[in-house]
Every structure is written in C-alpha cells, then in structure tokens.
Image (tube, rainbow, N blue to C red; front, side, top):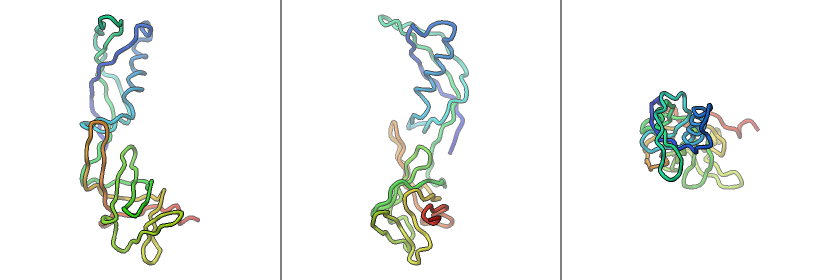
Length: 177
C-alpha cells in the first residue's frame, strides 16, 4: 500500500556547495540519498514530493561540513499481510516462484500454488495446469495475496499465495507465441 508521509533527515553538505543555490543542492542530495531506499519502519521511499522546511545549519567541528535538518514529504510503499498485489514473476523453480511488485520481492511456495498445477523443468521452468491452459513462467504477471512479511532494517521480504479465489495468472507472455 502507498502512503504519503512527512519525514525528517539531517543532511550534511560540503562548504563548496554554499552559495545562491544552497537549497537546490540540498534538495538534489536529499533525492539522491533517499529515493529508492527502504526503512523497515516506513517501507520503500518511492519519491519525494516536496520539501517542507530546511532548518538552520550546524557547522561540524574540524570538517567544515554543515548539518541541516530537513523536513520533507514523500510517497512510501509498504506491503501488508492480506494485501492483494499484481506482480511479475522473476524466477521459477521446484520450490515455488519469486515475483516482484515494484521494489518488493515476494516468494510463493509450491504449497501455496493450486494443487492442479505441476512443476515442469526444462529450458523454461514453469508451473502448468494438467490441461495446459494456464502456465506460470518467468515474466508472467500474477495476482497474489501476501500472507506474511518480514521486516529488516533495510529490506522487506514477503511470502505470498495464489491458492485463493480470483488469484493467479493475469497475463502470460508465453500464450502470445
């Protein structure tokens, strides 16, 4: 799920950046340092939408660097247990498959795949129904439900299932060929 929140961060800036474009340099450094990162508490920072306040700088003794407290608004992505997501399959093996929904990687175990789907090894490993009508392989789009999350300091891991109503393959690239 996406949230729009306000965060704070202390930014260090080298004295060579001081001048009329100080604010622009701070905002550019903030975007470079923060966008695309993950904090276990808030989730993945997708984009900074605005800078609310840049406080007074504090000169660091001995280095000349200045630390500015910056208050900014950003969009974050944080998956929750029970959430339904659409994801792209990145890897398939006999244990299950991995899929990505934006920055988060989700593992779906073979126990959480419908019983009528069998693993097929070969040059393009996949899970196929007995009649061959549905196939999960690399680059397939699937709708899945998150049944568990584990949050580290810098990463979020998810376990998903497609063994439920209205879940499974929504777009199969192999069907077009």
